[in-house]
Every structure is written in structure tokens, then in C-alpha cells.
Image (cartoon, each protein chain N blue to C red):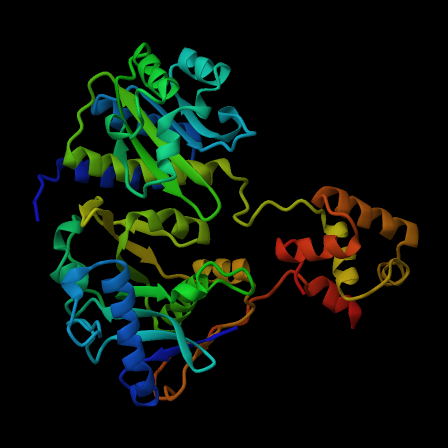
Length: 244
Length: 227
């Protein structure tokens, strides 16, 4: 086992400690820009990899691309041909841009994206895929001649994963539970519906008119985008909006 | 829902029948599927130097079949991290009575990614927190594949890195220390729909432990009005 001089390893650990103690999104971003800057990276993006019907703008967590590159990338819909996000689905490990597999002859559009990036000083890059059960995200960083070796790749891997996680936590509303869509009264009428009460019975229990109960049920149905009362109750239970 | 049993030296005799299938499953998963060939043994049972008397196992059992498991080893004794991967830990060795090291966390392939009922991996992650809280632990050290980190984050496990990731056999791994606290446990329970502790402590009446409370759910207002 190769023993590495752990200077960058220690820097990365100190960095993680520092961002865990930082409570502002901007504060974390500043520290991230500093540490990657010290390794020769001047640009970055952190985003969930957009599905085909979605734009990169919608799925971005933090955007540190040159503004013109980001604009060009979206205008030309480069996400459809960029080989880097595609490769994120195929690997668990971080990789350098130069190692991303694509066929120059048969995929000229992929090659074009890689070449156009150079016009913005994005000559060499490093990409860290982040896999969730239901989505894949990535932290991708680039520069003209960044300092990449086994030690700095390890350090950047740690920095990337923990920055992404910290920024997601800070971007989230204060409550840690999944975002709730129903208000308290809508949840309340659904709880009674889940127990088999009719709208009239629920109205008697909650001292509301039957019409008001129906209105709240319909609001819940609209918010959860379901088709009927049974489906609304089922989805609310699954999502944890109500419990039995 | 399957049961999660605490198995330690005090009650191991009650679970003897499960140990042979347990070690064979480990061989199947870690040697045959994941190709950790250093662990290969001719008898098809994966047992290592950390399977000592002091090791604690969580066995996830359904219809008398082992469907998942996890091992916890006291950090006052030799561990994977201290003996095999010390270079993964830049913060200095952990030898603490209140920290155990987790390893060999698995779910049999047939039971992965289920959607009916709590997922077995989440159940195990919740159960080990319950074990730690019950027995006075404050943390777990783990050597794990780096791609697990976002999953920990999503389920509420707070992982502090002890070093940077290293490539080993083509896979990025790192060492972390995870907090064992009541907040993590209750968050996990509410995520997977548990309202009370789930561990089975058969034959462990002599073990001193704190009993954990039921977790209050949001249904209470409606329940009160019904009375």
C-alpha cells in the first residue's frame, strides 16, 4: 500500500470540519472555492444530473461555471451530448475528464462539448459522481492546469462529497423531514378519512361543515395530484404526511 | 416485518444454527460477488480475526432465515481499521469503550431494494443505532466504500471523515466515525415508519441496558379527539 504524504488529506479534513461549522450557503461556497483554487481549479458545478425533460438550471445546487459557458451549455443543450454526466451513471468512483470514455469519430457532438469547454479555460477537469437511490448528482471542477495526482484526487473527492452534502443541507428548509405539502387541517381530515370516516362524520368530529371537509379533501387531492380520496390517503400515508 | 436479533457471547448458544449459514452468506457476498479474494477460504465460510467472543452481531431473521446482518467490534480490541487499514485514518487511532466498529453490513440479494415495508438495509441502520443507544455507545467507526456516504446523509446518519478516500481493488473506500445519538435514531425510525424499538434481546436479560421510549407520531391530535 502506497503511503502518501498527507498534506492535502489534512487540508481536506480541516476543510470538512470548517464547513460543518459554517451555517451559511455562501460561507461554504467561499471555502470550497478557496481550497479548489489552491489546487488550480477556477470553475465548478454541483448538480443533479438532469433528466431528458429537465434543464441543468433546474437541477443545479451550486454554479461556479464561467457565466458564458453556463449560458452556452444550456442554450445549445450540451447536456444531451456531454459525455461526463453520462459517465457518472456508469461509475461509482471519481474520474478525470480526460479519462471519460467516448468515441471521437462516432460521437462528434461529445467531442465538441469537450473542446468548447477549453475556450473557457476548462482544459482539465475532475468529476465526482454522487449516487442516491433515486438520482445521480455530480460535482465537476475544472481549470487550465490543475494539480491532479493520487493524493489531491483523494482530497478533492472528500471535499466534493462533503461540500455537496453540506450545501444540500443548507439549501433545504429548516425542517429535516421531507417537505410537507399539506397544511394541518388538510392532514387532519385525511387522517379521519384514513380511519374510514365520511366527510359528514369528519365534519361532526372536527365541528366543521361537510362542505368544508370536502373542500379540504379536494385541496389535499389537488396538492398531491391524485385522482380520488383513496389515492390521496394512500399517498399521504406513504409520504409521511399523515401517520396511523 | 423481519426481526432483528442482538447476538453476543451471552446468548450465542441460542443462535448456533444461524452461524454456519451466516459465514457462508458472507463468503457468497464478499468473496464470490464482491471479489475480496483475500478473504477466500477453502471451506466456503468467510470468518476473520475480528469474529471474536467480543463481537456483537445483529441478525435480521424472517421465517427462520437469515436475510441480513451486521457486525460490531469493540474499538478497545483490534479492528479492521486499526489492523488492516490504519492509513485510512489520519486523525489518530480510536480506542474507546463507547465506540464500536461496524463491518460486514449486508442484505441477501433477493431482499435488496424492496418497497413493501421498511427496506432491510434501513432497518439494520436503524437497529444498530438502537443497540448503541441502549448500551451507552456514542459512535461507530466504519471503513466503507465511499459511494455509501450520500446514502448515510439521506437517512440521517452523521458521518465524520477520519481520512481521505483511497482506491483499493478498483473501489474508493474511506474511514468515518458516525454519531450514535437519539436524534439520528428517531429520524430514522420516522423515515421508515417505526414507532418503537425493534431489537430482540433474547437470552440477554443479564445485560445492563437502557430501555428506549416509543416514538411519538404525528397522529396524536386525532387520536385524542377520538376518545
